[in-house]
Image (cartoon, rainbow, N blue to C red; front, side, top):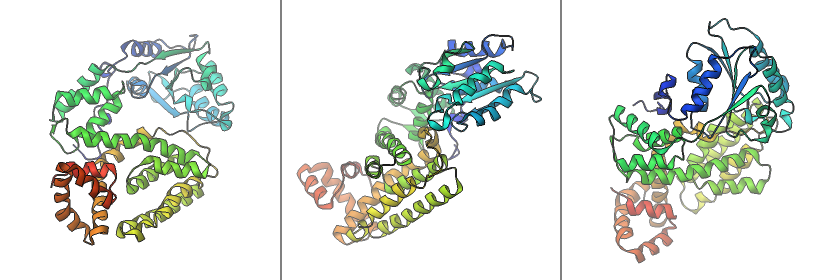
Length: 416
């Protein structure tokens, strides 16, 4: 497989028959599009359901079957004027690209919120009453009060999508394994499918992360991944705090809550800055702070002794407060970090373990006055034997080297 090829894209359904789960909801959507007329009372549908169940995907697949699909993300066009200019124009103009006609997709309609968006929902409702084309809107929660005007409109039909059952998810995972020539223990697929909570997209991404560089998957392969996954959930909350909060203490606390390798945290913030900073000066300032934080991170890594770690407060201030307070003009918008994660996530699952190994090596270096390379090659194998067999000694060594719990577990499972 190509290193950066995402399986949710590679194995995305091309036809409605290939879409997994929610057949009743899908058929309702198909009927709405096929039978749509400007004379019909119902002008638009609101597709609602949890992430990863095929809501936006269904609209894309139907739209790709010969329609002129115009897609707009409501989170990016948040006020009345912008909605009227973009959505309003598309809803009234005829299509010259398709004989089947045009479909308007307003994704994440529940992303309209806050003072900046007053009139936005009302504008969408007005457009629905005049549109010359079918309108599809998506939301995670149909009962979100922000979109109550749309949900309760006489010209809108609500279609609900439910979580996909475990057996259906497992079949998809098995099919992907077959096509990728991967042999997976049944317990692995059961575990991934069961942990997805009905989110097929998440299950496929998890499978790809676990299978990276492997042709045989065993339950032991899930251990490191699950540990990283827990960190991933924590970092989503931390990122949201950094980019939304104005309280300095809460922003600082968010860094601690992430509990992730500093290098990876820097990369996560780097990935998300363009989603939160739209003004050029904001981008300039935030990346300037982040680059300076990266300089301190480099110095810390080169000087693992106390002198190096004394620079840590500067790293934290620059990467959190510096970046956060660079946003002075762009209104805060909710970002679905899990949708941004795939490529970055796959490239860094291995780095997570390498980062832990490097931290252990630097701590051994600081205490034993040897190079990091020698610490890993000569000292770590003996520590592994001690940690695996001598519980009392393990505790003593862990305290002396100041190893964290995750580092203790890493040493115990370390294989040279």
